[in-house]
Length: 136
Image (tube, rainbow, N blue to C red; front, side, top):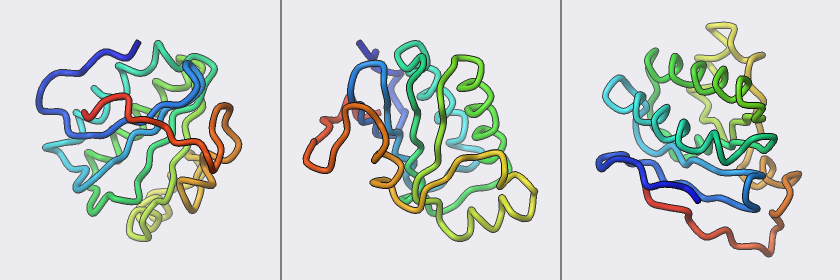
């Protein structure tokens, strides 16, 4: 069971087959005021996703600064420590440029769309509708 995080976390989370995958929709700005909330959200999923996959849907993200990049690296490292595959879905062009500029582009698995990122995951199909686990 996924616990509800503390009040004030603003990321939506969808999950599929228990223990297989979860999608965190990163909306708005991923800056110093909100980036710690991303890590807080993801940490609550780690125990439920062992040997599964975490998908960060970046399509709705409007802005990302260095603190956002730093938190994404922390999320990536935490996923590795917990045996969780992490992938980025629908990264905006400005974000790809940031990753290219910093040399971090090779660190992350990326897919052009959320559907492409989900296509190979157990318990997901184009006809399946994952119910939100929680509005975080």
